[in-house]
Image (cartoon, rainbow, N blue to C red; front, side, top):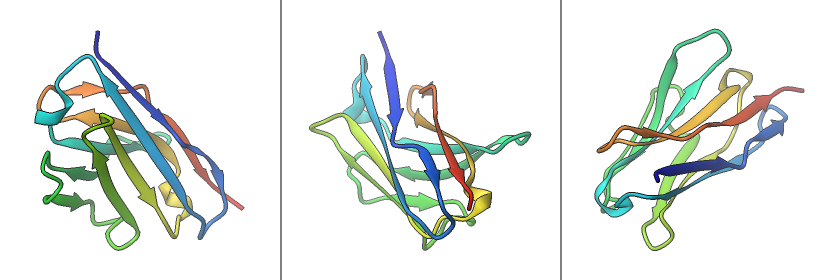
Length: 114
């Protein structure tokens, strides 16, 4: 059974940082690019970042370039999103996605507010 379990969300003040984690099971993690998406309240799901299997390819949405980084640990079937200099517009539910198979997690809530 496929599982993608996100964690690390929470309430943070503007300018703060969070590190999201996503742990995968039930499929071959090591052959799939991994992605993070954000769904802000009342808005469409939006691409945030992606990372290739070999970790050499990393891509970011325009809104997060220079503030977010993505990494993965293939030995742990995990992908991470380091979020720095957070802004109120970063608020939303963050979803982990296994791109090759189009598997999705349930999401973790991030709220950026003072």
